[in-house]
Length: 208
Image (tube, rainbow, N blue to C red):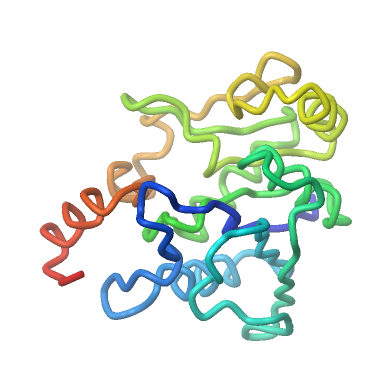
C-alpha cells in the first residue's frame, strides 16, 4: 500500500505557552528534525500540516526534499478543528491509500514502528496503538476509507479523535505487539506541557 506520513504541527500549543514544540531539542536535535529523518527511512512522501495561528514548525522546510524524500508543508483546509482537521487535510492532500499521522511533539517515534502500523492497514480503516495510558490516535494510520467519516464529523463539529473509531473498522495494536520496537513509554511519549518536557529532560539529561 502506498502511504503518506503526516506530521501534525497545527496546534496552538496553549499548554506550552504558545511555543513551537516541534523545535524542542532532544539529544541535540529538534523533534521535527528527528521525525523527518525517521519517516524518510520508510516513506517517500511526507506532509507537515500546519494550522492557522500555530507557531512556525522549528526548522520546517518550506517544501522540497529530505534525502530524496518529498516534504510538503500544507495548511489546514478547515481551520480550528484540532487534530481531526489535520487528519482531514492530510487525507485530502495525499494521493496515497493511507496516512500515518504523527504529532509533532513525539520525539522518539521510529520509522519501523510507523511502517509496522501501516502494514496492518490492509484489513482495517484505522490502525491505532493502545497501552495502559489508552489509545494513541496521534501515532496511528488512517486509510482513505476514513475520509467520509472525518468530513462528516468536522461538519457536525464532533472533533474528538477517538470518537471517529465508532464509524469505521479499527485495528487496535496492543503493547505486547509493539514490544519489539522498544519501550512504549518512550516510543509513544509526547510533550504536551513544559512539565512533561522537564520530565523528559530529567530522563535524557538535557536542559530546557
